[in-house]
Length: 204
Image 1: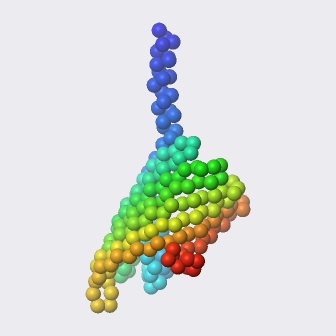
Image 2: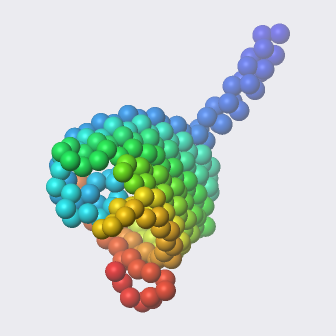
C-alpha cells in the first residue's frame, strides 16, 4: 500500500517538475533619474531630438515569460512606462510588447523571428510595429553573428509642425548585420550595419 502511494506521488510530481523547467517568468520594477542631451540615447523614448537637453525620470514595470525546450525558445516581454522630462518638456507614458521565437537548426546556427509593438503619448503620440526574421550564427561560445531583415510601421498623431499638427504613417523595410563578442568576462564588443532594403548595398 505504501509503495503504491509513493508511486502515485512520484507520478504526479515528476511531470509538474519537468513542465516547470520549461517556463521562466520574471517581474521587475525599475526607477531611475538622469540627464539626456539627446532623447535617442534614452532606452524608452526612441526619437532623435538633439535639442532635448533635460533631466528626466523613469518608472517602469516589466514582465517577461519564456518557454523553451531542447530546440525551441519563445519569449514574451511587456512593459508599462511613465517618463516625465523636467523643465518645459512633456511627460511621456505608454507601453511596449516584444515577442521573440528561436529554433536551433544546428549546434551553431539558429533561426527565428523578432516582433514587437510600442505606444507612447504626450502632446503627440507615436505607435510603432515591427517584425523581422533573424538568422544567428555562433562560430564560438563567445561570439555571435546575426542577420536580420524585415519591416517596421510608424504612425504619428497630432505631431507638431511649424504651422499645425499632422498625422502621418510610414513604412520602412530594413536589414541589419550585427556581431557581438566577449574578449573576456569583463568586456563585450558589439557593432552593426543597418540600412534600407530598397537601397542595398548602401549602409546607414
